Length: 210
Image 1 (cartoon, rainbow, N blue to C red):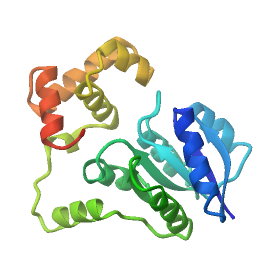
Image 2: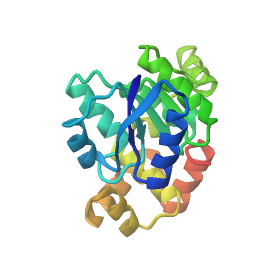
Image 3: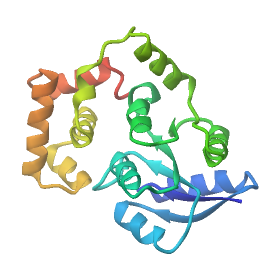
Image 4: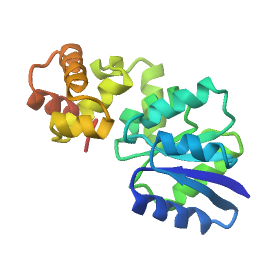
């Protein structure tokens, strides 16, 4: 059996993923966590082969979790799930150590296929990510300004573009409003825009949000 841990801050999504995975017959969900703190405690008590990991977690993001697992030389293979477009955020996740990146709206069967493939030691790459990789390698696409953003800056950009106020972003990321303001200022500078409306327009133009 493939042992899986599901990490997502929404209980309904965790429940749906558990049902989808267990229907496969060869996969068992050995634990769930809603954030990095719960995940750390969980991994002290259970062993797993594959982790289904949401990018947009409270506090430390999914990319932060990937970085931490890499620093610990963990053998856990990670499938990242996100609401963000695959061709824009997938490369970032793969570079951070993920074995697969899937949009949450994907066919549930693909999630099962991805878990099985990464459990066997192979990366699962969707056509959208494959095309992005090909365009990057062949030089057809110049590096976009948002690619220089740190993980926290990227989270701030996406949340602002989604219409969240700074106070809401601070609560979501478990940071102080002052710290979020600093990240916002850095994003504005790096993307060479001046307002939240321009940030949102940039995100839409570059397909960072649907």
